[in-house]
Amino acid sequence: MLAWLALFLYSLPMAMGHYDICKSWVTSDEGPSWEFYACQPKPMKMKDYVMVKMEPPGITCGEPPERFCTHENPYLCSDECDASNPDLAHPPRLMFDEEDDGLATYWQSVTWSRYPDPLMANITLTWNKSIELTDDIVVTFEYGRPTIMLLEKSLDYGRTWQPYQYYADDCMEVFSMPARKVKELSITNANRVLCTEEYSRWAGSKKEKNVRFEVRDRFAIFAGPDLKKMENLFTRMESAKGLKDFFTFTDLRLRLLRPALGGTYVQRENLYKYFYAISNIEVTARCKCNLHANACTFREGSLQCECEHNTTGQDCGKCKKNFRTKSWRAGSYIPSPHGSPNACAAVGSAFGNCECYGHSNRCSYIDFLNVVTCVSCKHNTRGQHCQHCRLGYYRNTSAELDDENVCIECNCNQQESKHDRCNETGFCECKTGATGPKCDDCLPGYYWKQTCTRNVCDEELLLCQNGGTCHQNQHCVCQSGYWGVLCEKTECDPQQQDCGAAASLHSKIGLVCGMLILQLAQELNL
Image 1 (cartoon, rainbow, N blue to C red):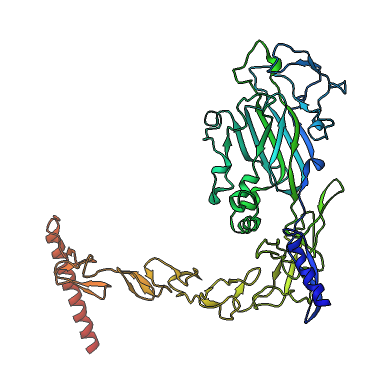
Image 2: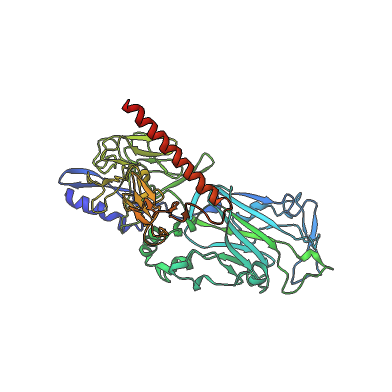
C-alpha cells in the first residue's frame, strides 16, 4: 500500500503541470522522507498588486477642467475632463479597475495645448518584487494609440532602467532602428530588443486599441506555436545567457512620447484632440521565487513568496538560519520533468556537506554575502569550495577536483622568475633574458653567470674586431696594439695630434718602472 502511495505522490508533479509541486512524501528502502522538486507559483494578474506613479506632475487632465474632442469628431469638442467631478474625472486608478457593462473607464492626460513643446508622459508600475512574465503585456488605449512610445523595465526597483521595446510609426526616423517583428526572431536572438511599427500607425481609434509586448511569440520560438513544448523553453532558460532575466523585472515604465495624430500632421488650430487615454494595462506574470516556492501572497504591502526547500526571503533568496551547511542556490528547470531543487541543507543531513571537494570538512557562513565558504583548505587549494589552487601552484588538468594531487607546485627559478606564481599551464613569468617554463634557460644573446647576463660578444652580431676572439661570450681577447670591448680601439690613435707624445710618455713610464724594479731588487739582495 505504501509503495502505491509513494508512486501516486511521485506522479503528482507531472499530473498537475509544470513545476507546481515543491515536495512529496515518498517511501524507499531507507524509509519515508520528503523528496524535493523545483517549483514555481502560478501566473497572476499583476495589476491587482501594482503601485503607479505618473510623471510629470499635472499630466493627468482635470486640474483645471478642460475640453477635449476626438479625431473622428475633431470640431465637436463638447467632452470635458474635470478632476473635481467623479463623473468627469480620469485618474490613473481607472487603468486598473474592473469595467462594468462594457463601459470603458480610463486615465487621460492633458491635451497638447502647449504645442510645439512635446506632450510626454511617464507611467511607472512598481511591484516591490521581482516578477516573471508568462503572457503578453497589453496596454489598451482610447482615442488612438501613440505614434511614439517606449516600454522600459528595471531589475533593481527603479534605480536603473533598460529598454524593453520601441514603438513608432517610423522606427528608422525616430529611433534609428529598422522595424522588426518578434516572429522574425530565432533561438539565438529571442531576447533582442526590437522597434515595431505594428502598433503605432493610425487605423482608427475604435478599430485598433491595443499595444502589445509579445511574450507568447517569444516563448513560441522554443515551445512551438501552440506552446505545448514548454519543457524546451524551460531547458533553454537554464542554458541561454540572459534569457531568463529578459522576462524578469521589478518595475515597468511606459514612456509616451507623441500622441495619436489621426493619420495626418499636427493641426495647430485644434489641439484639443491630441492627448493620451489608457483604459487598461494587463500584466500577467508570476512571482520570482527562484524555483523554491509554488505560492505567492500579498502581505505587509508587497508580494511575498511562500518559500520551501529550507529557504527564506522575499524571493526565497537565502537559506534559513539552521540550514547553511552549503551556499544558497536557485533551483533549476533541468533535468525535466522535476528539475533540481538545490534545497538548503541542515547540519548532518544526507546532502549537508561543505562542498569542499574533500579538501576541507569545515565551513563558515558569511551572513552579509549569504554564502557558505570552506575553511582551512588542504592539498594546496583555496577558494569558496577549495576549487582553486594556492598561489605558487597550478591546476593538474589530469586530476579531478577532489584529487589530493589536483594542485602542482610551480617550481619557478627563484633567480630568473619575477615571482613564485605561474599561470594555469604552469609557466612562470620570467625576468629579462630568461626563458623556459620555469625560467631556467637564457634567451639567445644572453649567457649564464649566476643570472642571465647579456652577451658582451658572440659569433653573430657582437663580433670582436681587428682579429680579436670572443671568450665564452664574456669578453674579447684582443691582438697586440688593440683594446676596447670589441677590440675596436688602437693603443695610439694617429688622428690625435699628441700621438707621439703619448707614445713617448708610455716609453718614459716604462723606463721609470724598470728602474724602480731594479733598485728594489738590489736592496733586497743587500
